Image 1 (tube, each protein chain N blue to C red):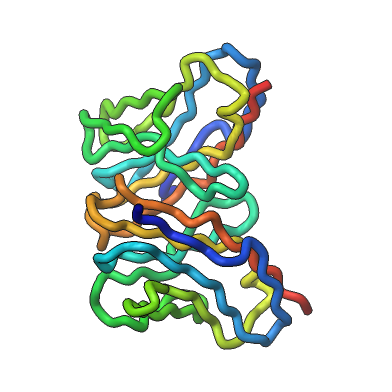
Image 2: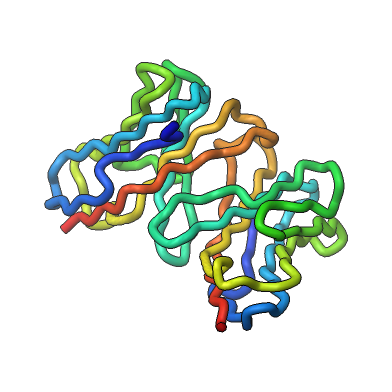
Amino acid sequence: IAGITQAPTSQILAAGRRMTLRCTQDMRHNAMYWYRQDLGLGLRLIHYSNTAGTTGKGEVPDGYSVSRANTDDFPLTLASAVPSQTSVYFCASSVGTGESDEQFFGPGTRLTVL
Amino acid sequence: AQSVTQLGSHVSVSEGALVLLRCNYSSSVPPYLFWYVQYPNQGLQLLLKYTSAATLVKGINGFEAEFKKSETSFHLTKPSAHMSDAAEYFCAVIFSGGYQKVTFGTGTKLQVIP
């Protein structure tokens, strides 16, 4: 049982390049989320999906896009990376979106944009 | 504006001493409150959560937190620190609207001194 897997573990990327961070969960959770973690700022929500086929914008969505073609996968795409997108990215999932549903987090992807 | 504040970005305690990590929120309506732990190079793991039931919440690894409405606080405590408790701890708040509206604190890094 893997839970949530993220790939790659880390990546160094040239500015202007396109990059897709992958996230897969095997828990059949309806809701999935992407966060970025920056020193001194905690975690900030980028995008979310309440169920397959739907997505929504979080607190910091600019420069990022997501899709949710099926229940298990929730890729995050940076169309044209910029240095300010250097961060650690975490994918998370929960059974539902209610506050009583526990969120489970993946191990993260460390992205450096030069 | 609704917000969450963690006092102290770094806390050091001796092994066996009391652990106290502070979290305050600003809201006229009691929110849902969470504490997460993050070990180095890992994702976040839920320690405990308050969802308007008992005000004293017990979590994993011997941690507990008490919701105090009058003080708008949800401080995390553990009677006796263990070396394995060294990690970063995040308080998170949902004022309304489910996980797509979650706000994370900036984190407190706990150092345990042998």
